[in-house]
Image (cartoon, rainbow, N blue to C red; front, side, top):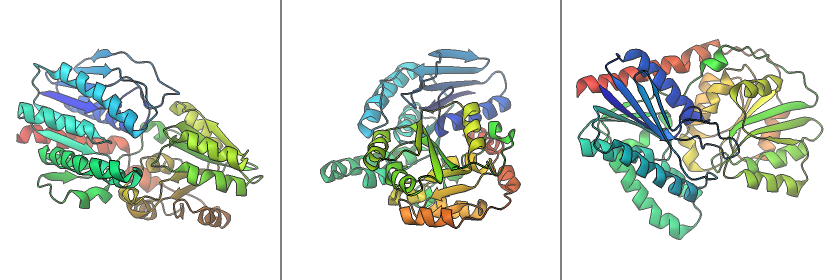
Length: 389
């Protein structure tokens, strides 16, 4: 068996996409015999321009081959991503030319990696296993403000999306909130979500850090999807002297956050560049609360943030500004969390001021959403697709 894996992010890069793909490869590697080959085509680390880990353009690890394509620097903006993906597209086609695969797997947060997988699968008449981590057409409706651009782009993206999904034999959705968007798909659908990595399972986090002032920590992407500039500056200003915010990460709207903090004269928000996981766990340990937020766009009501799993493993109180499926998931599995309406400053302050410290026990959550277990099942479903073809 020769399996092609297309993933825009992979080790040693940061982010949910890289962590997910890394875990899946380990699960597949354990299940495949030595006569099988896994060929991964990804990019050189580029998730955050402020912190790019070193990596080799080519690696061979037993029966796993890794190609990393160098792409232009970008700040995470939509237009930057288009140019970056154009380079990835060309690099992938060059590498797969004259190659033949038995199965193609593509994981896609911005659609086009999935579209690329669909094109290759159709050209080679091979089955496609598609892992959808986001719905680009929904994001375009909300995020792009220019009506002319949105009106032009949306029908094109919707056609690409439909072609991509209908090219797949198996469709995996990381959020059950996405299910209603693909009613036209007639193949098999699964819901293998993100999960908790071993790094977080082997560490104990105290429930309360006993800080004065208390520390609220956010770690992750700082982009349009998170809308941090709409909530953190005003809340932090109102809570001066009582709370400190640690914001760890980078992304396309970080400058908006910086500008808003400056305008309001906020001095209790620490902006910290992305850190590796051992250092990140130190920040979590020092925190009293962990913060999660999605922008108040309709598109994000279908999303299940990957950070939910990481935060949930810490036994720390979670403050989450989410709606839709993300809210339903947290209410069902992390009912000790503090939930508020996205972008609502007064709502955030109300839930925080009414918080009562209590013992947090999340052993059931941790057992149910262990990433290794989830990826083992996903790897089995990929191999079943190969056996069915």
